[in-house]
Image (cartoon, rainbow, N blue to C red; front, side, top):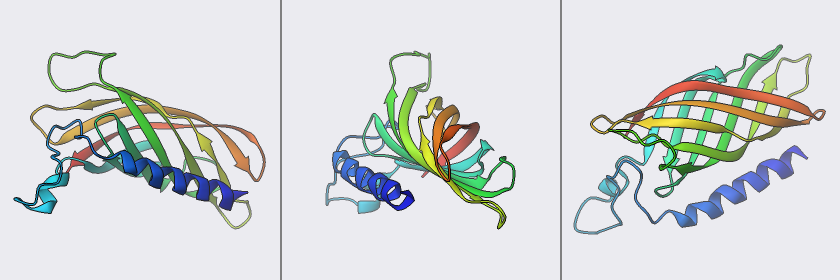
Length: 173
């Protein structure tokens, strides 16, 4: 069951990447133009930083277009007898719900999966999650801050409700 879930997630994320033909919300992405460096085409689309919560560790996000992004986090789990937690989500952003005088403040919702690696006396856990959050993107700095809450369902080794979330900051490359 765990392999089927991870395979389905991977196929979904790969298929979604075909939509990556619009600019990132940072406004610096340009369609590929061979008159400049290929690296310039993706400026501002990838961010990396830290997250505190479930998990506490590294956070990354990649914009597929101006409303759709893939994010992920990996780090220490707060859950009992757990060593490591990995998650990945596909997120849809709405930039119009919370207008701000400067910067951008999208609300987002998405779907994804998580794996919680536990110690040798307990089985690893895997499941699905539904993250809901807000993300503030600064106008004049390649930085964003976010807060998210992610209810979910643990599917293995047993089925039960699961909750994750956190706060974080990322630098955009």
